Length: 143
Length: 390
Image (tube, rainbow over all chains, first blue to last red; front, side, top):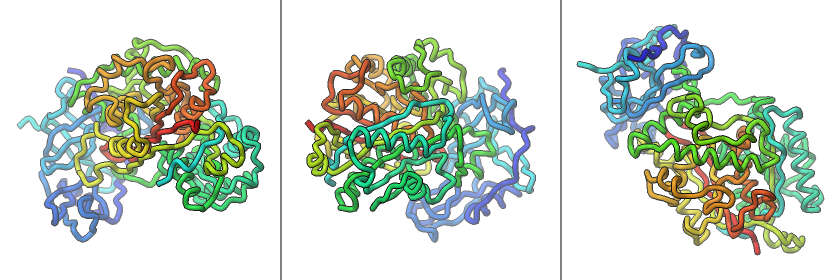
């Protein structure tokens, strides 16, 4: 099994919410994933925006809690980084397609190089940030 | 749009260097002087100024007018184009539009950036909130994600990508203005064995950021004739698309805005990919060129590797590719880097390619790529088809 850094020892900054993404970050305090949902089209979107990517309208958006489970859409192995990640390579950066149909970019824990593949089922792993919010990471969903 | 009522009557380019010893405005002044020398124009005849994006200029909200002031240009049309790597070709289209609308007659399109010497960029985007906390290195990570997905969907022949890298290096060796550090021949094995940055993106997939400048004079064809410019290059087709598939939450990253932009440009030009004499695609990463071959219709979607294997991309070959080395082998002049692909296309159509002159100068296709959004491929795609006036 080829070890790959889980990045948990890297010091991270507090979250930096905008007015329209605050609901997402507030949800992470309780380790919950909240996504924006467009009421007109019945579709989700991520990252949070000030309006609907489907209709362009702000008023079509509401927030819904989701499981945060999904599968790997694609991944890369970061081997050369800037501070504070420098020296902690290699580590994964993945895009995970949540079951609600949005892609979320994240780091990965508890996963070897051999296990990682496109289509691998993933579940949330929460990593505390200094402001009491949590960073959404993923680990393989082996259950 | 009467794109073809405008003409490029002169081009200029500085040496591309790892770090500029002089200020960005000094490089800009060099370009202006070379263009005045080549055209015989007085500076007062230039009544429009269009700048590319610039990491050095990024700290100034008044970049185009400040630059006009620094260069003592009195103009009736003044703007900066902020679509990143698409801005040099985008500037030519905007110059043509402004000339056609009667806003001005003779435009200096100026592409200067000294990102290594002085980077004033402070991006306000998704990055601070969504990607910086992940150790995401921007473009190399984005292209790592994109390449892995492409490989999953279609398979990816890395030796085919290496063939493009080798061809561009051959061209950089023949280009005195290319960054010296990069003017060394490489082999496909060198490409394959170069170290991984963001798997499967290797060092030799990637551009090296450099400093430099380039520029063009665009005027109305009527004025070009009046002034007796016998040699000029005319844009006959242009397409531009920003945030392709904006209304989709999960996009196929192998599909890009070059598809609609290319269809538009080919239609305007009355051409098909088979007609293209030389190809000067924006090259921030090698795979981007393969994807453009697919999206522009040189081959089918997903068949890029096979097409590369059966095509000769040298300046003597059947589809000459970035005959000055492209940005990967000549150096990326920051956000003005698209000027390198564009100027080389114009140079070839002027018949001034020197030791790397292509035989068929009936046209050239230039593209741009600009900006990297979250979880997609790139923000803006442009396609421009150029032809000599004769």
